[in-house]
Image (cartoon, rainbow, N blue to C red; front, side):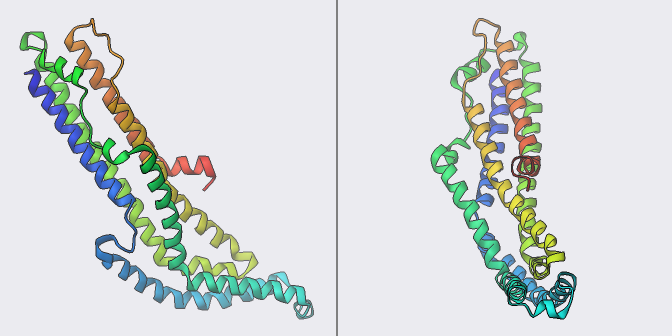
Length: 278
């Protein structure tokens, strides 16, 4: 019965490891190459349509900015004022026309950071969770009369919890990935607001929000690195205690670390906001 309990826990860890590997693939995949680039082709088409609307909005925001910042037409004739206004318009026009490239370049920087973390921590191999040998032997020493049935029940529940947590984690990363697509698709519209000083806060807010979504990937990777280190290390257990007690300590610590991982990944946007104000 002890072997059955160990197997349930082992299967749960393998399922969780598989979902974390799927998360890793999403975090290291460029949006324009995901699913063969078919999704990005649709996003590019939408961006092109909205780009034409963004160009029209440039003129509107530019006019609003000129009216509100220049008291009269005479003031606009001043060289320094005219240069400042038209440089702003040119920068906004460039941002609207190059919005997709800007989005991809920022993602490339984030993925480079993730790659550096991966090379420094060997997270790829760390996602293959294994139960420590001493703990595994303790599982096998538990007989039916020693409380193997309650231990199996706890391990079975832990297996189910790992499945639920793994699916929630994967959905969270997928949600981040789709948000990047949405940001890229509508980017010409908010970026056009940079053409006018009164409306530039819209573009700044959009860029800060997009940067925050991208940086969530770094926080998620760091959370996975810390979690894999916790799981891979032998917990501090009283070796003189009963086998059932030792197993309970290991399973409870494992579930506790899993809940921390879930909280960090689900709250990665809040972590980015608290750290960087994005």
